[in-house]
Amino acid sequence: MSEPWKEAFDHIHAEEALKLHTKEYLQKKVYRPKKSFRPLYGGLITVFCLMALVIFGGYGLYMTPTAYISIDINPSMELSINRFDKVIAVDGYNDDGNQLAETADVIHMNYLDAVNKIISDEDVSGYLSSDGVLSLTVAGENDSQCQQILSEMEECTSGHENARCHMGNTEEMEAAHGAGLSLGKYRALLRLQELDPQVTAEDVKDMSMREIWNWIDSLAGESESGSQNSGDTTSGNGQHHGEGAGHSHQHDE
Amino acid sequence: MRSEEDAERAIELYADTVRRICMVHLKNYPDTEDIFQTVFLKYVLHSEPFESEAHKKAWIIRVTINACKDLLKSFFRTKTVPLDQVGEIPRRDPGGGNDIFEAVLSLPSKYKDVVYLYYYEEYSAVEIGRILGKKVNTVYTLLARARTLLKERLEGGTQIE
Image (cartoon, rainbow over all chains, first blue to last red; front, side):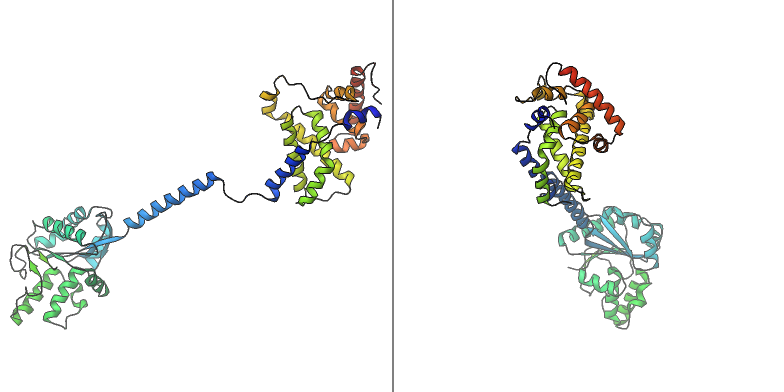
């Protein structure tokens, strides 16, 4: 190399700071990258988790039943009610009940609207007009909600002479489900079994409430024991329920 | 991927070469830092072995020249001038050989690499062709034209050869 060219470029050297920065860059980029998330990502993840918590937590709360309304006439079915007074499930407990549960579009409706819609159903209103007995039984963990529902059920059915409203409890309801019956029909079965222990759940499963109560009344008549000695208290117009002639609201406390 | 020790050794050995090429092509220090990071990151990630130190040096020169060209032809750079560079005069170090250095900087970009590689790094036209990806005859042509331009700029002054 000629001297002038050597002189022209030999004096150019990489600055120490330049070399140091390059080494630091490689360390940061390749050899010791920070594994922690950037604050932005951390924030996004936190927001996402909170949203998921709110959405799934809210969904869980919404879909948890806190009360049940058993509706029995001949179609036998139960409505599951959440803490927001919305119907979240409908279960049928006999063929007519299953059919009505499938066709009655009451999910996410307020329970009062749902019960009104079901009572207005052609089959149910047909039973009611032909002297059928409608039994509405409320049960649940939340006492104040159950009392509120029962009160509204009584008001709702005040125009139907053969409608009966009862307060049940969750233990009875579990036993009823174990026997394959709705709560309302199970309570009628218990009443029947007091008079005739031979009666089974299968015997009453497909009977209408009118038929069950007629059976109860006939057995009660035979044993000459009052049919109102079952522990129920009558808060309706005080008429005997056996014939279904009056509008009787019964409360089991 | 190459080890950290290997990377540091390469930086110590070839930083001056990379700096000189940057000096020929670029006008500001931040761009030079970018080129250093690009070149040595590529070196670290280049896993194929080199046949020799000369091969490694030629590879680094080629990567540096390509990185400089990429930087210069990026759309943003061709359309804008950094604020800190407005009115800036290219950095010139005083000292011997300054005329030649100034003359090389004043050459059109396409001549700078062949001149630097031929006269300072003392590569042959064949080697330069291999490094720059050009035909040998093209290298000779570029060298001849560059020599003419340098003679014009250095007339009456420093000898080129």
